[in-house]
Amino acid sequence: MEQAWIPLMLSLKVAGWATALNIVFGVAAGFGLARWHSGARDLIDSLLTLPLVMPPTVLGYYLLVLLGRRGVFGAWLDRFDIQLVFTWQGAVIASMVVAFPLVLKSARAAFESVDPQLERAARTLGISETAIFFRVTLPLASRGILAGALLAFARALGEFGATLMIAGNLPGRTQTLSVAVYAAVQAGDDSTANFLVLVTSVTCVVILVLAGRLVPQHSLMTSR
Image (cartoon, rainbow, N blue to C red; front, top):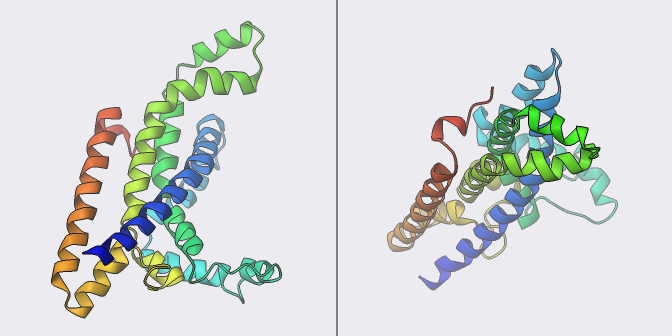
């Protein structure tokens, strides 16, 4: 079972980085959608939520087209000798894209639930908009954001399709938990597969319990 800990540690690293990036970009996008009143808002929200319903292998293909050496961004990165395909950094990007809607939806719902009167009261005291965001809005929305981040971490931890497409299955380098389970089953190594499945299942259950205690479950995937 010692070899099973390597993909576990790699998965935790990938999921951790993906979640950290999603908190930054997801919170920014969620706040923007919550405060932006435009007819195009629902369209933008739908486009940003696509990774939640799109097949992971399709997302992986899109990422290959964009980040491969002949891709739009991949060719540009190659000039600086930066390679993302078949690297753990590529796995981070794949996991981040797949889990992004979970943070976005939770953040938007959390920001829309903040009482605007509290923000107006802060403005009457002469507080800047930046200070209002960090001292009033963000703390009030933090529970919902944290719940979304936990769900995104669980989703990133179990990501398979997009990760396999862009990062491959290189033991010790890009072989995450879900990919390792697939490899173990293909190799007929039932003991390793059972152990990895157990670790993944327990971790995800713990995260879902924590997320459910932060905010009601019905508010995790809905926005006003």
